[in-house]
Length: 306
Ligand code: ASP
Image 1 (cartoon, protein in one colour):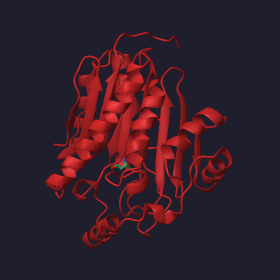
Image 2 (cartoon, helix red, strand yellow):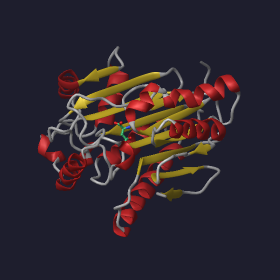
Image 3 (cartoon, protein in one colour):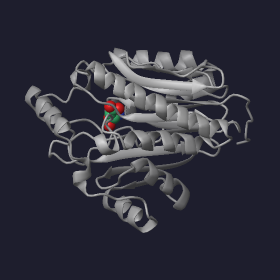
């Protein structure tokens, strides 16, 4: 696929979709501050001529290091009170992709996903194999107690008491993602998550699945999804948004909004962030809130939750 050089560049990020009813004002402020700072630093990478792949990896790794999001440090618990993380990254020039799932000791799963993309002939590594690869290649590993969170354990017990795995009514903290286009017109997307609270051990959601949680295609669009993963896999959400643009000539706004509305009709809750080849941005969601923010050379920084 030819490289498409555009004058427009920018980045959009998300910090998960959901109910978020219990977020205090202080928590909302802390989330907004973290998202703003991360966006400013990622934008600088792009402004200085850096690659979209570097910008999205950087943004997602910043969120993974924060306890405010359900990824890396803030990952939620499985029904066995363990934490298992999934992540993926994709480069739209040639569709090169890297993904990891069910990793328990990787400080930044998105960095490991990038290594899978760049250093292996594979796309997707899981569990022990992914962790051995991390050790061999020098990606940071940590003790499982690095991820310990009393808040997230309480969240698990609350969900267990409600006897439901229904994403729509879970009190949530969010999966994270970033999508960017750089000055060379290359689109990249990245997504990272601890999955869903009370998931079965070994369960893998949409976030590390190329085409479901993450998609990047130069000349068309890039997408990172968040929501009830099982539905996002069935409907191949990230790729679907770009396919409608490619085959039906729809705009980014039209395509992404329709996909999220259609998901709502079948009871699938969530949202997505997307960017097109002209650095237009769309952030539809069908939940009460979705942490999201963006900045491009055409639009000022904005960060919102509801
Ligand atoms: N999509 C994630 C999963 O199903 C969860 C989320 O985005 O909140 O693992």
